[in-house]
Length: 241
Image 1 (cartoon, rainbow, N blue to C red):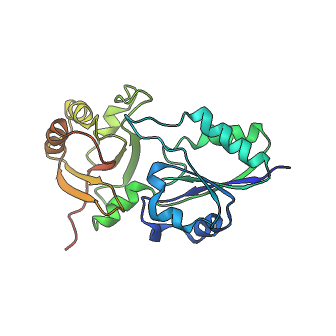
Image 2 (image 1 turned 90 degrees about the vertical axis):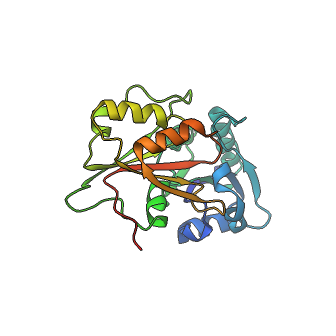
């Protein structure tokens, strides 16, 4: 007897940004395996009596190993349970979704993927700006600012990332942004390029900082990294009044 796994995208943390399908799946789940950033009020939507299991990963903190998460998904599904794997943001954006899907396919367990609001979109919306702009920002690129060791990936296309006519969203890049900024400026990007730091998007302690690439790099070089953050830079629109 095999159950079924629903990969549910929780968005940036605001339960009002959950999709109707996400709420419906949470309300019927027997088991919910959730990320740290997909907890809090969002778990209130889970069915009363559902088994809730934290499997979150946070940089610099003790975290569940990916192999353990994969095993839990398979083991719970093999009991015949309706399993929700609750992932922060959009499940398919820098969320290690592929490894978990591979484990389910190997075990011949059915699954679905329910999309959600990724933090780049949420950060722009909360800042009252669009992610793209006619004539000046026709291209949007998402990158991760950290490799498996937490360092700036060395194989990024820095020339493309220094394109002043693009908007770039940097996930998990708060710690490495000073290094990234130095590489971008060396590639010709102006240090005065607009930048946005959006911390804890969708949570009560949310913080938005409108600045420049150079100033943000200097600021983050002096700060300790605690809150999660999304960084946008490039041809950003002015904040709407």
